[in-house]
Length: 491
Image 1 (cartoon, rainbow, N blue to C red):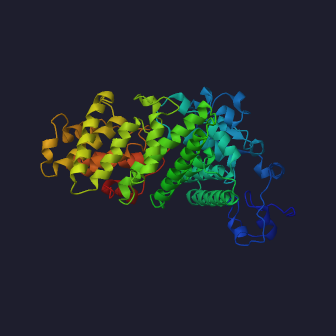
Image 2 (tube, one colour; image 1 turned 180 degrees about the horizontal axis):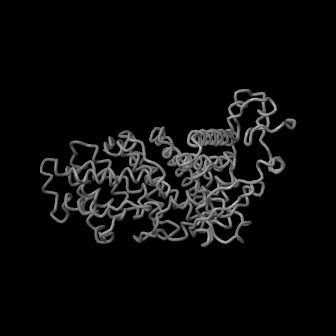
C-alpha cells in the first residue's frame, strides 16, 4: 500500500507524490509509473479528495440544465428521460466528492469554456452520454433510437467499452476552447491513454477465452474505436480498414451464432427493444463507415467480402425494428438500406475505367433502381441527406456509363446530373445539424463539378461537416483532412 503523501498537486497520482516526482496525470496509469513496472499507479479516492480543501468544489459552466431535483439520478435512468434532452445554460458549483460513475445529473455536462479537472471521469462520461451519443443519431430519427440507457448499461459493465467511451470524450473535449493553453494537448494524451487501456483490457479478455464475439459490448467497442480514430485527425483513415474488418467479422460471428441456434431447433435469445435499436444503430454505422472508407482506400471494397455483405443484406431484409422508407426508421443513414446498397455499387464501379458487359449492365440496373427512389425520397427544397445520396450516386453512375462505348444508349433523359447537382448544392445551409453524414455525396459532387462557384460551396460544406462532427462546431478541420475528401482517391 502506498503511504499517505503530502499533497503537492491537485491531480497527480499518489505514487508520484510519494516519490516526489512530477506526475503527467494520465489515467489510468501515468507515464512515470508505466515506465517502472515495479510501481503501482494509485490515485486519490473520493475520501482523499474530500479531505483536501483544494478539491472540495470546482466551478464550471454547463450547457445542459434542468430541474435540480434530477441531480441524484443515475445516468442510465436520466439519459433516457425527456427532461434530459432539454437545452439551457446555467453556471453552478459541482462538488467533486459527490460525483461518482453512477450518479451525475444534467449539471455535469460541461461547456468547457473553462478548464475542469483532468481526472474528472464522471464529467467526461456525462459529456459522452449527453452530447456525444445523441449527436451520432440522425436528427429526424424515431425517439427510440435517441435513448441511450442500454448503451449506458454496457459501458458500466464493460471496462474496454468504458475506457473507449472516455477516450472518445477526451479526444472531443481536446478540441474545445479553454483558458488553459495545455488543455488540448493534455486531453489528447488522456484520450490516447484511455485507448491504450481499452485495447489492453480487450486483449486480456480475449486471451482469457471469455469472449465469444457475439457480445453487444464488443460490437460497441469496435464501433467506438472507429469513431475515436475519426476524431483524431492525426490518424484519420489510417486505421479505419482495421476497425471495419473487425466490425464485419463480429457481424459474421453474430450471424453464425444465430444460424447455429436455428439449425439446432433452439430459440434465439430474447432481446429488449432497446437492444434491437442499439444493434440497428451499430449495423448502419458499419455501412456508413464502409462507404466513407471507399472514398479514400481503393483497396477496400464493401462488396468484396460477399459473405459479410450477404449477412448485412439478410439482416436488413428482415430486421427486428421497422425498416420502411420513412427517414425516422434509419437512425444513422437517414435512408433505406436498398438506397445505400446502390451507393456502394456506384462507389465500386466508379473505380473501373473500362466496364465489362456485365459491369455495364450492373450500372444500368443501378440507375433504374435509383430512378424509382426519386419519388420515395424526393427533393423538398431543403438539403436532405437521403436525397443527396441518390443524386450523387446517379450522377456518378451516369458519368461513368457515358464514358463507355455506346454507353449513352443506356441513359434516359429523366435525370440530368449537372442540373440535379446544382439544385442540391443550392439548398446547402451550414448549421448545427449539418453533420458529417453527407460527406460521401458532397465529395462526389465536388469530384464531378466543373463550376468553380459550386466547388467553393462544396468545399465549405465539407469543411463544416468535418468541423461539426459532434453536433456543434468545435474547431476547424485540418487542411489535409479536407483535401482527402476533395480528392477522394478511392473513386
